[in-house]
Amino acid sequence: MPPKQKFSKETVLKTAFQLVREQGFEHLNARNLAKMLKSSTQPVFSYYKNMADLKAEVFVMVNRHHNRYFDKVEGGENLFVNIGMAYIDFAIEEPNLFRMLFMSGGFSGVKLSDFFSSCEDDCNDALTDTISRQFDINHPESQQMFLDIWLYAHGIASMLVANQLPTPRNELEAMLKNMYGMLVNRLLADKK
Image (cartoon, rainbow, N blue to C red; front, side):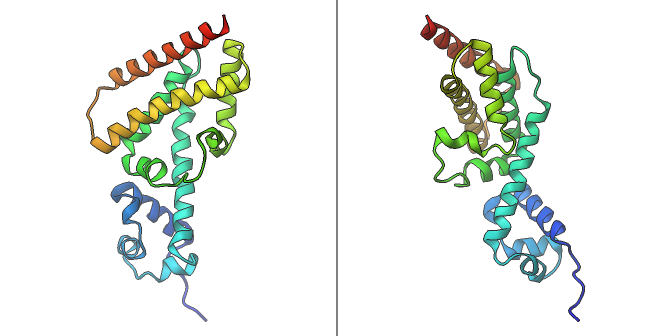
């Protein structure tokens, strides 16, 4: 009878998540994971055929963690600014996880226009529907507006993570409000 596993698959996965969170995706390998588990690499490969399979599950776990940042977003007039700030907060608070999701090729091959389908619970569609209702515009126009504000927030978040730029949160929020205002003005001018 084979010996009983000392670690569950869940423990291995959570430890891999923690390793990425602390050290970065580039450090996720069997040796480093075994070191964190204080074991050999055997537990890793008893649950995963290879490291690519483990990394794929870690990517899903990190994406779910990222999506939870949007659960606390308040709606109302500043909904899209608040969403942008939640995205930036994730980048600031979890820079290694942000790098893994958005700066490591995890969405490689996905067109920007198809990025909306990467949300597990159709959250992006719900947001674009909100824009459509709020400004009485069609879905493609609302998708474009959402994409524009997301790309702006992503640019800020990426600069903060890549260059470790200390910037007060109120300044970041003011930048997002300014961009959102310009997008709304453009939208309203186009409707005339």
